[in-house]
Each structure stands twice: as structure tokens, then as C-alpha cells.
Length: 105
Image (cartoon, rainbow, N blue to C red; front, top):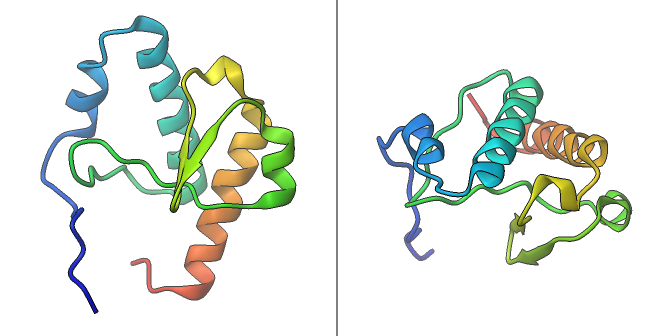
């Protein structure tokens, strides 16, 4: 199996988000981080220079709004482009799936 190119880093998630220049994007990032904390019960960890992975759930994705995906990542430009309730449901479902199938301690 090939080594992962992107790995967890010791970088600060708070510093990463504070460095987002666009005020609305910075606010959106804070809201998504809060959704993730509620869903996982854990603090965020930086992977590489700035990747956040939410997984894929087709039924909910059709209701999400404006987004794009790549391999296993969900990209949204602005939180206002998507339905926040649907995004939180996606995050929760993703976390539940990961906990059922992998050791997430």
C-alpha cells in the first residue's frame, strides 16, 4: 500500500482559520468547525496545509446546495451556498460511518 501524502500536522486549526482573509469565509469555516465538534465530540486536527474531509452521502448531497467534490472531499465556497442543516446531517452521518467501520479513538 502506498504511503499517504497528506498527513496530520501539529499546525493550529484556530490559526489556520484566523488566517483566512475573506471575512465571510472565515465565519463560515468557524460554523463548519462547530458542526464537526458537535458531531464528533473532538477537536479538529490539521491534515496537510488545509484539507477537511466530510465523506459522501448521495441522498443528502442532492439536497445540500452548491458544492463540488474531489476523491473524498467536499468543497464549499461559502456556507450560504449550502443548506446548513443538511451539511450538519452529512457531518453526523460521516462520523457515525467512520466510527462503525474504523478505530477512531
